[in-house]
Image 1 (cartoon, rainbow, N blue to C red):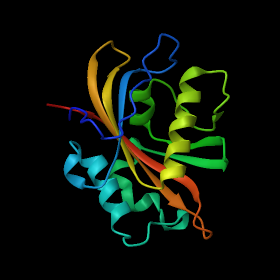
Image 2: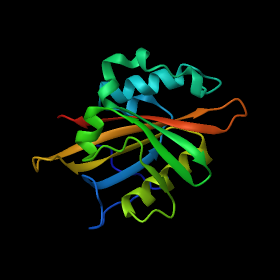
Image 3: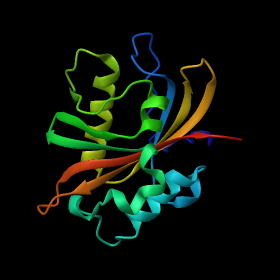
Image 4: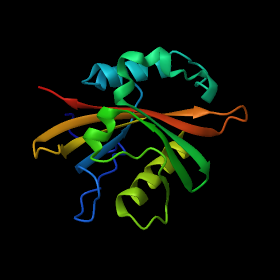
Length: 175
Protein backbone atom coordinates (compact mmCIF):
# COMPACT_ATOMS: atom_id res chain seq x y z
CA UNK A 1 0.00 0.00 0.00
CA UNK A 2 1.42 3.38 -1.03
CA UNK A 3 2.12 5.84 1.76
CA UNK A 4 0.45 9.26 1.40
CA UNK A 5 2.68 12.07 0.19
CA UNK A 6 2.23 15.66 1.31
CA UNK A 7 0.27 17.60 -1.32
CA UNK A 8 -1.31 14.37 -2.60
CA UNK A 9 -4.81 15.54 -1.63
CA UNK A 10 -5.40 12.36 0.29
CA UNK A 11 -8.59 12.20 2.30
CA UNK A 12 -8.10 10.42 5.57
CA UNK A 13 -10.85 9.26 7.77
CA UNK A 14 -13.67 6.85 8.04
CA UNK A 15 -12.26 5.51 11.27
CA UNK A 16 -14.93 5.73 13.90
CA UNK A 17 -16.77 3.28 16.12
CA UNK A 18 -20.13 4.02 14.50
CA UNK A 19 -19.24 2.46 11.13
CA UNK A 20 -21.79 -0.09 9.94
CA UNK A 21 -19.45 -1.83 7.50
CA UNK A 22 -16.12 -3.69 7.56
CA UNK A 23 -13.82 -0.75 6.76
CA UNK A 24 -11.36 0.26 9.45
CA UNK A 25 -9.22 2.85 7.67
CA UNK A 26 -9.52 4.32 4.21
CA UNK A 27 -7.10 6.53 2.29
CA UNK A 28 -8.35 8.26 -0.88
CA UNK A 29 -6.38 9.49 -3.88
CA UNK A 30 -7.15 10.97 -7.27
CA UNK A 31 -5.87 8.61 -9.99
CA UNK A 32 -3.95 9.63 -13.09
CA UNK A 33 -1.85 6.50 -13.76
CA UNK A 34 -2.58 2.75 -13.90
CA UNK A 35 0.73 1.88 -12.21
CA UNK A 36 -0.66 2.54 -8.72
CA UNK A 37 -2.91 -0.53 -8.73
CA UNK A 38 -2.23 -3.85 -7.00
CA UNK A 39 -5.16 -5.95 -8.26
CA UNK A 40 -6.24 -7.07 -11.70
CA UNK A 41 -9.89 -6.13 -11.21
CA UNK A 42 -9.14 -2.52 -10.28
CA UNK A 43 -6.54 -2.16 -13.03
CA UNK A 44 -9.05 -3.64 -15.53
CA UNK A 45 -11.70 -1.06 -14.63
CA UNK A 46 -9.22 1.82 -14.85
CA UNK A 47 -7.96 0.59 -18.24
CA UNK A 48 -11.55 0.39 -19.51
CA UNK A 49 -12.38 3.88 -18.21
CA UNK A 50 -9.20 5.49 -19.55
CA UNK A 51 -9.60 3.81 -22.98
CA UNK A 52 -12.22 6.46 -23.78
CA UNK A 53 -9.67 9.31 -23.56
CA UNK A 54 -9.63 12.11 -24.41
CA UNK A 55 -13.35 12.11 -23.55
CA UNK A 56 -14.51 10.19 -20.47
CA UNK A 57 -17.11 7.43 -20.89
CA UNK A 58 -20.81 8.10 -20.74
CA UNK A 59 -23.23 6.04 -18.71
CA UNK A 60 -24.47 4.14 -21.76
CA UNK A 61 -20.89 3.12 -22.64
CA UNK A 62 -20.89 0.80 -19.64
CA UNK A 63 -21.94 -2.79 -20.36
CA UNK A 64 -21.50 -5.30 -17.53
CA UNK A 65 -20.94 -8.08 -20.09
CA UNK A 66 -17.61 -6.45 -21.02
CA UNK A 67 -16.50 -6.99 -17.43
CA UNK A 68 -17.91 -10.51 -16.91
CA UNK A 69 -14.73 -11.85 -15.31
CA UNK A 70 -14.98 -9.26 -12.53
CA UNK A 71 -18.74 -8.77 -11.99
CA UNK A 72 -18.59 -9.98 -8.39
CA UNK A 73 -16.14 -7.14 -7.60
CA UNK A 74 -18.07 -4.37 -9.36
CA UNK A 75 -20.56 -1.87 -7.96
CA UNK A 76 -22.57 0.92 -9.52
CA UNK A 77 -23.87 4.05 -7.82
CA UNK A 78 -26.43 6.34 -9.45
CA UNK A 79 -26.43 10.08 -8.79
CA UNK A 80 -30.05 10.96 -7.98
CA UNK A 81 -29.33 14.65 -7.46
CA UNK A 82 -26.54 16.78 -6.02
CA UNK A 83 -26.65 15.24 -2.54
CA UNK A 84 -28.53 11.95 -3.08
CA UNK A 85 -27.14 8.65 -4.37
CA UNK A 86 -28.38 5.10 -4.85
CA UNK A 87 -26.40 1.86 -4.86
CA UNK A 88 -27.76 0.21 -8.02
CA UNK A 89 -25.54 -2.84 -8.17
CA UNK A 90 -22.99 -4.61 -6.03
CA UNK A 91 -21.43 -7.97 -6.71
CA UNK A 92 -21.03 -10.76 -4.20
CA UNK A 93 -17.38 -9.97 -3.41
CA UNK A 94 -18.31 -6.32 -2.89
CA UNK A 95 -20.91 -7.31 -0.29
CA UNK A 96 -18.45 -9.72 1.36
CA UNK A 97 -15.65 -7.14 1.61
CA UNK A 98 -17.89 -4.23 2.61
CA UNK A 99 -19.82 -6.37 5.07
CA UNK A 100 -23.30 -5.74 3.75
CA UNK A 101 -25.18 -5.64 0.48
CA UNK A 102 -25.96 -2.08 -0.44
CA UNK A 103 -27.99 -2.78 -3.59
CA UNK A 104 -31.04 -0.50 -3.64
CA UNK A 105 -29.85 1.59 -0.68
CA UNK A 106 -30.23 5.36 -1.06
CA UNK A 107 -27.91 7.62 0.90
CA UNK A 108 -27.24 11.30 1.33
CA UNK A 109 -24.89 13.81 2.92
CA UNK A 110 -27.44 14.06 5.75
CA UNK A 111 -27.88 10.29 6.17
CA UNK A 112 -28.56 8.98 9.69
CA UNK A 113 -25.94 6.24 9.19
CA UNK A 114 -22.42 7.73 9.57
CA UNK A 115 -20.73 5.43 7.04
CA UNK A 116 -23.37 6.31 4.44
CA UNK A 117 -22.86 10.05 5.07
CA UNK A 118 -19.15 9.51 4.48
CA UNK A 119 -19.87 7.55 1.29
CA UNK A 120 -22.16 10.34 0.05
CA UNK A 121 -19.42 12.91 0.69
CA UNK A 122 -16.97 10.74 -1.25
CA UNK A 123 -19.42 10.40 -4.17
CA UNK A 124 -19.86 14.17 -4.10
CA UNK A 125 -16.07 14.58 -4.41
CA UNK A 126 -16.06 12.34 -7.49
CA UNK A 127 -18.91 14.30 -9.05
CA UNK A 128 -17.10 17.58 -8.41
CA UNK A 129 -13.63 16.50 -9.56
CA UNK A 130 -14.84 14.32 -12.47
CA UNK A 131 -11.74 12.10 -12.17
CA UNK A 132 -11.36 8.54 -10.88
CA UNK A 133 -10.43 8.08 -7.25
CA UNK A 134 -8.62 5.17 -5.65
CA UNK A 135 -9.07 4.02 -2.10
CA UNK A 136 -6.90 1.70 -0.11
CA UNK A 137 -6.74 0.75 3.49
CA UNK A 138 -7.72 -1.99 5.87
CA UNK A 139 -10.92 -3.86 6.59
CA UNK A 140 -12.03 -6.82 8.64
CA UNK A 141 -13.63 -9.74 6.84
CA UNK A 142 -16.65 -11.45 8.42
CA UNK A 143 -14.31 -14.15 9.79
CA UNK A 144 -12.33 -11.46 11.66
CA UNK A 145 -9.35 -11.56 9.31
CA UNK A 146 -7.69 -8.20 8.72
CA UNK A 147 -6.95 -7.53 5.04
CA UNK A 148 -5.72 -4.67 2.93
CA UNK A 149 -7.94 -3.62 0.05
CA UNK A 150 -8.03 -1.27 -2.88
CA UNK A 151 -10.94 0.14 -4.80
CA UNK A 152 -11.49 2.44 -7.73
CA UNK A 153 -14.44 4.73 -8.42
CA UNK A 154 -14.82 6.18 -11.91
CA UNK A 155 -17.35 8.81 -12.98
CA UNK A 156 -19.71 8.06 -15.86
CA UNK A 157 -21.34 10.98 -17.63
CA UNK A 158 -24.68 11.85 -19.20
CA UNK A 159 -25.08 13.69 -22.50
CA UNK A 160 -24.90 17.05 -20.71
CA UNK A 161 -21.42 16.22 -19.36
CA UNK A 162 -22.61 15.75 -15.77
CA UNK A 163 -21.71 12.75 -13.65
CA UNK A 164 -24.75 10.47 -13.64
CA UNK A 165 -23.18 7.33 -12.13
CA UNK A 166 -19.97 6.06 -10.63
CA UNK A 167 -18.71 2.61 -11.52
CA UNK A 168 -16.39 0.99 -9.04
CA UNK A 169 -14.47 -2.14 -8.23
CA UNK A 170 -13.02 -3.41 -4.96
CA UNK A 171 -10.61 -6.25 -4.18
CA UNK A 172 -8.51 -7.57 -1.34
CA UNK A 173 -4.77 -7.06 -1.81
CA UNK A 174 -2.95 -10.34 -1.35
CA UNK A 175 0.77 -10.00 -0.74
